[in-house]
Length: 310
Ligand code: ARG
Image (tube, rainbow, N blue to C red):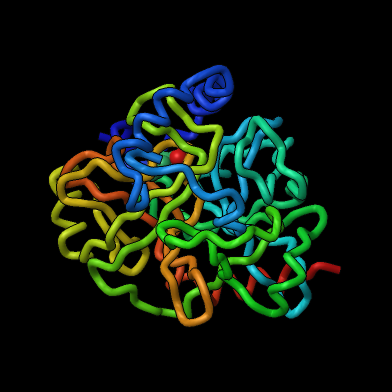
């Protein structure tokens, strides 16, 4: 049971991602053609460049293995803190970097930046056996500069699909994602957007060098718990959030972990989930499971205070 749960961010994924550089484009395009309107990662679509301006690729010695999201730490227009999944950094060694402002990992964008990770801080109650509290903060060596146009804001991305009228992208300049309020509840059956450079097929070597996104609706905690119970996995509704379709087909997958699940909120796109685990990817009746960010706001604010920029 344990290894059925797709927690591994090990060598296989890193290999898969680096293989992708040499092909797979045709495959990705045919998926695009099948679903050009909605969002569509497994069952997803290519993101518009720069339309998830808070996302980072977390890399070990230059190889992508997880995602993360830049958060605001104060009024200044820069940040040195990234949220990711604790399981991403469980056996993290040295040589971790984050890449912000990226789209195609094989072709650096203008304005793309790579920053070394100074410190990894897993949630103290993270439990690798139950995947409870799968949240971590990365403290960067130096701050990432935000797009000057966002002032004190967060979650601004006028270009994100499925918006029909793309506007001129102001380059790939990072913008922090908004954080939910403490204990904020995302209603059931609300559309969310998940993004990442992860596998486009369960068990596949078809990882994406290009940022992809997928739209998946939230699932009630009771339903989520009843879907995972037969597999011996306990869902804690305070700590976990489920999103996916009953028929499957659309989901996050390996190497998407740590990345954002966002919902449009009052101020902008809000980080309601951190990609955490699933059984396989996009299987019917098995939604993706995300760390419920609104449960961790006091801890996140504490980390912001404990790790000041200067
Ligand atoms: N845990 C996996 C990772 O490390 C991905 C989790 C998402 N899986 C899913 N089916 N939603 O990248």
